[in-house]
Structures are given as structure tokens and as C-alpha cells.
Length: 476
Image (cartoon, rainbow, N blue to C red):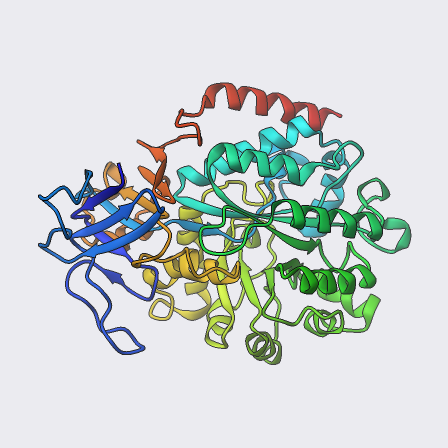
């Protein structure tokens, strides 16, 4: 089969400003948005969207052999595949661990670092599979992971993640994270979790040259991601920026997540976080930052002018009591705002459609209901997240875009009595997608993840093996 018509959906969120359920709507930039209420046509041979069908219409060539399969979408809301801009896949092994259940960031990290230092290749493979499968079933088609732990025996950590992404057929931005500033030198991580800068930079180059794909439709991309100001040296930050410029890849780090981090930067560098970012050559459109909670007015303007992006992680920020990011002001200043679930030890889920709802509510506390609409937060999870990862081929439903789509059903008690599909998707608390397509191939059917080999995951066996590794890791 080469052409599939997803026919007559309940609603389509195009990923560009407002939802479209009928006639075209005048967007803020002028012109008329296309009406896709008649559905979407996907060419599976190219993995792209080739036609948006207007209300009451039919695809070109329908009835004359131009369509090979028709999927009834009349009970689905269709969105672009959701895009996760910040995660730590390995942390699915340490969810809801009592010793850190009630701690803020620094205490949480100091207790978990020794546990994470026992990570093994098998454990990472299982943790990554669980995280990515959970994301897929929540409607996520592209995920960025920030892996910065390379204890003994874990030199091939990113290679393991590449293999899992390929097995699941999911798009991934896998960042080669790093920690080089240990406790003995004034950093937060224990010494057994840090690496020498030369090792980090050499492996970063190897990974980019081996795996990084460019252009529309890329499945695997690599970014460089020193962990945070309190876990890497200033020299490594500068050298990572220079290497990213040379190799033309993106840069990622945690920044301004907590006031403790702000205090650390003032004490160690004599600078606020954005000044520090500027001093090491990171204030550029190559950079996207995790969290970005504690920026002042001037810093928000500077970040927007530089083209920096921010991964907003509402659940993690609430769980660790880190604060409320100034997402609306950041976006209004020109910062691309995406959503991230963050690590599954500070969320503790890998569920992106749930994160959309959390973003709506926490941002309304700061800005009010009228400024933070259901459409706006869906845009953060799609178009905004794509921009944060430097991509224009995903995160939107348009002719020529990648056929990455999430289809949600609005059934069950939770949706009974709801009236409007797009608000219902967000406000009634959708938890999982019914179907998910990546590059024209189904990766979730009837709510269950399907591997690249076309076989449903054996989730019972996966959970059993993952649970065993989680217990081993914590027990030591």
C-alpha cells in the first residue's frame, strides 16, 4: 500500500496556532489555514503527508485507484506526533524511590547518583525500551534523551539507545551528556560518575560521525549535552560548544532549574546562569535548555534575541518544587518553547499527552486562562518542541511534512459529557493514544506499541525484566 486516507476525524490540530474542526480559520499571521476536517492522506512510500482533505471532500483520485487504504478516523482527534524535548530514559529504573520521594533537586541527586552509578548495559537497554514504549503509547513520535552517566562498562550507552530506537521505529535526538566536575573539585556528582574531558569529546565526535542523520525524515540525531553548571567544568562547556559548531549539531544542558543552581553559579563563577551561558559560548540558536525556571526579565529578552529554546518540564518542576517556568514570556520574547517529561525519577511517568495538561494548568496559575489555551499547550508539544530540536519537518500537519501522527479516542467515562474535541483531549485528561504513526508506519495500534518489525511488544516480559533490574540497582 502506498496511500492511506485517515477519513473524517473528529478534529485535527495542525500544530500551528489553533485547532481546525471545520472551515479554515484566519490565523494571526494572515491568510487562511487549511481545512483538514475531511482527513489526511499519507504516502507510505515517502512517509509524508500528501493531502489535507477539506470538510465533505474526498482525496484526489479517490474511486479511481488513488487511495489504497481508508482508515475511519471519525472517533479520533488527530494531532501531529507529540515531541518530547527532555528526558533521562535510564531513570525509569528509579521511579517512586522512597529515600528521594520528598527531596528537592540537590538532595534528590546526591542520593540517586550512587544508585545510578551501578547502571549496566542490560539495565539501560530495558530502561530505554520502557521509556520509549511508554512515550509512544502517549502519542509521542520523537524523543530527546539526555544521557550523562557513563560508569565503568557503559562506554557504549548511546549506542545501546540507538539500537532501541531503531527496534521501536521511533525518532530520537540522543544527546551525548557528560559530567566532568566531581565532588573533590567542588561539583555535585561523586567521582565514580565523572569522565575526563578528552574521553567525552572523543566519544561525542564518534557518535555524531557514526549515527547523526541530517535533513527531512531523519530518525536518529545526536546532540552534545554537558549535564549542568554544577557537574561540568567551564572548559568542557566551551569545548563542547566549539565541537558542536564544527560538527553542526545541537547543544543541550540543564539551566536555571532551581535557586540552588543560581546560587552555585554566583558562588563558583560570579555570574548568573545566562551570563555564564554567554561566557562559554552557548548563547546561540544551536542551544536548547532544560527547565529554564529562574530567568529574570532581561535574561528572557536575551535568550529570545539569541534564538535559544527551552524545554518546559512542568511535572518535574512541581515534583521537585523547583518553580514555575515563565513559558509565556519566553515564547513572547522569541524563545521556542517545547515540552519535556524529564526523567522518570522526577515525574515519574513518560507520558507526553499528560504533560500537555500539566503545562496548561501550571502556566494558568502564572498567566491566567485566556493566555494559556488548550491550543497553545498542544503547540508547545508539537511545533514548539520541533523548533527546540531544530526541525521543521515534524511537529505539524501539512502537505510535505513527515507523516508523524497521533490519534486519540475520546471515549470512556472520563470523556462522557464532553462537547468540543480539542479542549476535551486536554481538559478531560487523555492518557494514551489509540494509534500512532511515524513516517507513514503504524507504531501504536489499539493503544499498544508495535516494533519496527511489525510485532507488538511483549510488555509482560519487558516489565518483568525491567522490574528485576530496578530492584537490583537499588539493592546494590
